Length: 597
View (cartoon, rainbow, N blue to C red):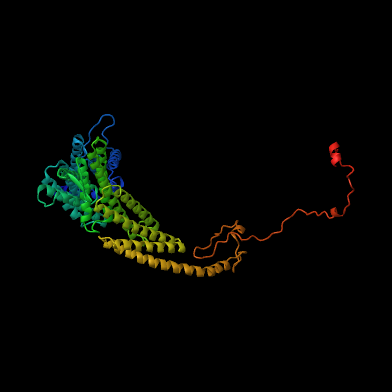
């Protein structure tokens, strides 16, 4: 009997263990999907925080886990409370709401002040608290994979908190590294989508790890090199980028103390405003980043983003200069220096605008001859290139006007003016070439031939002018030579196509006339649609056949209709009517009229 009781008790324990549920959550995939669908694709943390709040409200209500109706009664989520997977979702989304609220404060326009930063750190602490609770619950209630992902999530949140606090860099490094190890291992298993997500998260963690190593002193990275390690996009990098921007701003402010002049085309302009110095230094750093890297190493989209940052920095510098001009008073020397500096910054902006538009032209040319590009995006039409070259011509004209506005022009300014004139001529040639392409695609051979010939003469003139300049740009020369050859070949093709179409015109016309049928009779007569309106049959016919739809006959057949009778009066011309002159009233004449009558 004792053995039977022991067997029964052991069976009950086994049944209890087997019935104890183990929940499974793909944490990274769940969070990534929610973040991309609710604002973080565009960095909108406010929208994501509101989504987390709404999601938590639905979870509390569906689980009947509310905190009382009248008086607030706190309910804690413990291991015994977790009876289904939605309780784990409850803890996870609470951590996400606290983290997104902190990131929302981090993205304020002027940065968080002391009070807001204290609140930000408090929200990050709350996120760490809930993430740690989530990891503990998953360790007992989740399967092995869910437990690992929860541990990685908690380590990531802890690293974020220490990262923002600027302290305990070794513990932050350890947290980021432990999260990276977990995601590296999870990236080896599971379906393909999950592996891709894990690898992306590993790449997002790498810049934060390198920054922690830099702060500890175990890395040889310089402050200026840190900007290259944050080029990966993702919500996990937003805190790192904010911290990196603060470090770079501090480095620029230190460099600005030694910057006293701005050099441009042989001119030297003094800079007294610290804000102007920092803005110019930021723009120059971005320019070095853009030009020091090899062509093609930086994707075109990233280069366009760098150009936008350069424009923003120079516009900020011009705003500071004009504020100084407004408050300069009556000092003519200070006003002249500030006006010259404003002109120099404007000229640099003009040059960068031309370079950016040339980049847009190269992107558009790469998509011109494709039926559909790799990303299934819209291909380029010749008209779009014509519009871009219109912009380039306007940019060069504005830059020439700015360069010719000064009185004491140096040799460098004259050389830049000549370069702008050559560029303007080459832009005109390319614009004319793509305008001809547009006419050619529309079938207008005469106009296309004339424009190709004009583009060839313009490119030839630009080549002659460019070869006469001392500093010859070999890349531009090769481009103009290629353009000249393309114009020549295209004009020959258009000429030949025009002659062929002219020769074929009578034949095509006769073919079209021979197919015209006034009565609409075919080899196999068939009723028209207007004659069979009572029957449900298609008037278009089978899609595989090329027979024209038979709607109604043209021209309509003649039909006899009733007509009013025509009356001809034949007796009128043969009747002799009597004279009625005696009945007519005679005019009475006066005395004078009688004498002269």
